[in-house]
Image 1: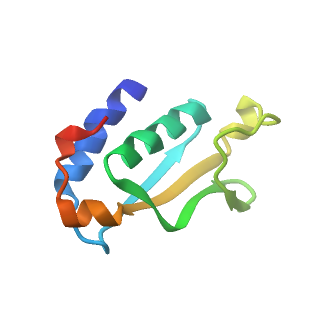
Image 2: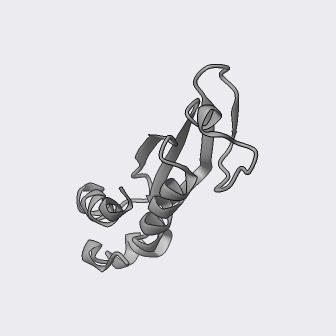
Image 3: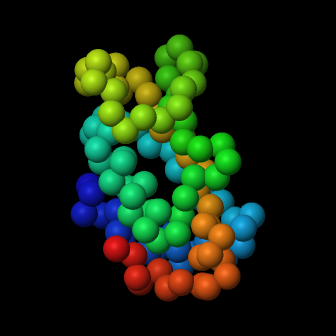
Length: 107
């Protein structure tokens, strides 16, 4: 799925108003692994979309436990990983609101 991150982020950038109050809510399972989500967040950041003050969190759908996102959790097996959802609110980095950087420049 990583090959779809760039086109998805370009679309998000085209539709999200260039305002400091604009937000994109990202909710994703990590059944494909943490590196896939980390890749998405890197592509989004390169386009000026960064986590807001709430950051990125992980929510266990069985126990209700909430914790901060970590790109790597060595002790986690595939069964445990499937119990977690990643939740993030992404907003524009300050200089992207002012400059109106083009979405097509996503690297």
